Amino acid sequence: MSLEITQDIYQEYFRIFEGQNPFFNYEFSNPDYADEFKSYLKKGLKDFNFFKTIGFEQLKYSINSILVVDMPSDGDGNPYYYFIDVSKVIDVKSDKNGTIEHLIFEVDSKTVAVYDSESYRIYKVDGTKIIGEPIVENLHGLGYCPASYFWNQNLKGSNTVEKKSPITDVLGRLDKYLIEDTFKEYADLYGTFPIITTYEEICNFEGCDNGFISEDFTYIENGVETIKTRKTKCPACSDSEEIGPGTIFEIPAPQTSDDPNLSNPVSVISPDTKSLEYIKQKLVEYADIIREVTIGTRGRVLDEKQVNETQIFGSFESRQNILLSIASSFEAIHKFANDTVARLMFGDSFLSSTVYYGDQFFLKSVNTLQNEYEKAKASGEPDEEIDQIYRQILATKYKGNDERIERAWILYNLNPEPHKTVEQSRKLVDFGAMDQTDFVIKSRFNTFISRFEREQTNVLDFGRELDFDVKIATIYDILKTYININNSENEDN
Image 1: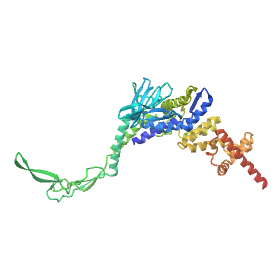
Image 2: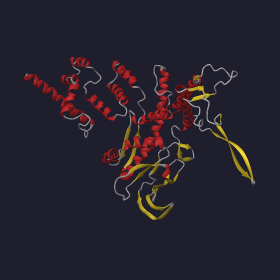
Image 3: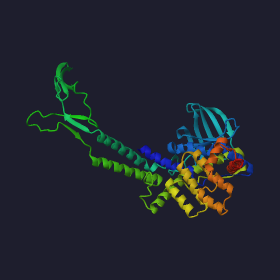
Image 4: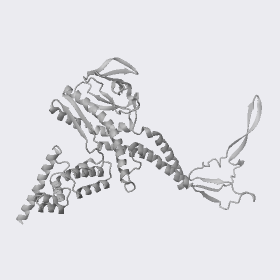
């Protein structure tokens, strides 16, 4: 269960990569470099996906890792970056602000890297001893060490190496939760497999006395033989199980009229239901506190029927603030990586960058967004506002399925008057607010799209190399030809 809670937490944190209003910008003295650099980030480094996948893994499992921006050892080729685990770090020095001044780390068992504000150097090593001169030495001209801590929130103010994870404050509670959950699992077993008591059978093994056999043995002490008695487990009774869920526990049967009268020879020891309910409630309380501290809301899913508008707003605001804090740390290391790559590639021609994940995240359910969408249409909100809500619906409904989201957005942009029904569109034609061509495409949209994908290819693959607006215009022109073809067929008939 503690694993389920942490999965909930990190699933919430992953929303930082799904911001509605991200902004990435790179400025160069030569504007042509901007397109070249963006292309390299997207196709060569797969930059955003790197931080979305490998970067997010650091948040979960390796918060103290360090990002290194490197160059090919021969000095040719473009720069790239990667994370090194703190276990590979031999030495690191940073100033009070956490800026790394030099970094020494293990490349493999036979080489170490020494990176500082001037150069990249690689040395051969024998054990812990550096052998001779560097086998690689390349000046980088950055003026700073091309390495940075992944996370920028220190565990202690003066310690820049150990970082404070977003879940650091609840680690103790997670341990307690795990213990309580173990207790609950044990108690649940009693509910399913209670202890059963029954009369024990009398053991017929010779010499058995309550499960033990007495036997004499001789030993010599100071030259004198002494006979002692020891007890060993009865071979017939030694396989008795320890008491636990599902155990059949044997109790002595009455032997005389003075023994208690056990009228029920077999009985079931039922679990204490109050204890079970207490443990379950305690688990809920622990989980609520953990989630409230780490993601800003107590439940796994906010039940809007059970809370008022103020509570909903407060929960959204709290969740938003936590996500903004995490996003700011990712933006910082992402910007460091991008800036360093740009300086290594273009030198002083690189001027500045903006790396902004956005401040609006998909925190609402599909049902909530659908209600907002319908209200916005009914109240006549501007199409731009309605478009924004619709994009939230797509991203929330098909979360994790980027191709499904992209396809839905393409179809949305191809559909004339996507916020209106066919009947509503017909009225627009009557009022002169929509031409006949657009109306025909609107009314036969699914048929035309199906035909397009049969004759061409699916709308996702068509024109992938084109700018989005050009792609939409090209597909739409093809859809128009279906109207002309249909009209010609009607005339021939």
